[in-house]
Image (cartoon, rainbow, N blue to C red):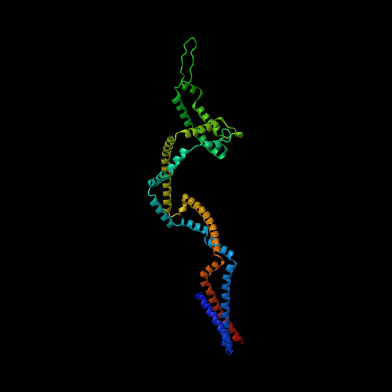
Length: 395
């Protein structure tokens, strides 16, 4: 029995005893007041004691519903993902938090070289070997075979968006007249003096070969403008949409070259493939790392400017994007975690059994509830006293 319960039952017992004694005393006004006061204290104490007992008896009667209600209250009503996320986002608007974060960023990223060093180390330690291995084992034959659902069919031609994007880029490249002129001059310089064919001498003159430079033929049948137009036509034949799924010759040849190139790569000795793959990634990745480090450094400078102007961190587009994405992810995860936690809490509460659950509640709440009985007895004493005074005055 708690201390409050002892006090309450002491008041209740004293009130009962006083009420009984009042009947052997002479019927004077103060006895009437005393009797009513004892009645009020006794009834108040007994009623609240019954109410407390009823509360705990209901715990066992409505055990399953109560466990669900407790779980819902603790998880759903007290742990609210939306409020947690809102508080986290609110921190982005605090200048002091922004300055603290910027100080941390400046410590981690003191200069562009630190970024490039970090990215290079991460690449060498975690990604380089995986990338090289992937290139060595790359076999596009099966992929091309799966994409080749009909003769000469290439997957991007069945995707209007991809086809339009590639077509637009190729068209842009082929539309450059300066590149066409350079291609024309390159052909002339590379192959202009090659003998194209031989013209036999008329008999009985001895047959001799007469070399005709390719340049003469090219200049007669082809000029830079014509070459430019034919390049554009070639792009159209390879990438432009066709009616009824008709495949054009250049498109079929491009697909065949892709297959043959893949076959050649697979047939290349493993040692050569490793050497080629290693050289390829070592050529391509360092400039990419340098570009990424410069981009990160520019964002770091933008963030520094924002903090210096006492602007919220999410004024930076990257921070705003990251904040929204993290908020969305956390909301989903916390909501899922809340649902799982609620179910888990219900299971654990029900595993205790109704008796143990009641004992747990009583152990944690009974000291406070027993004071209700004390208050009830005290309030009954006051109200009973007032009722006694009114009764004495009326009589």
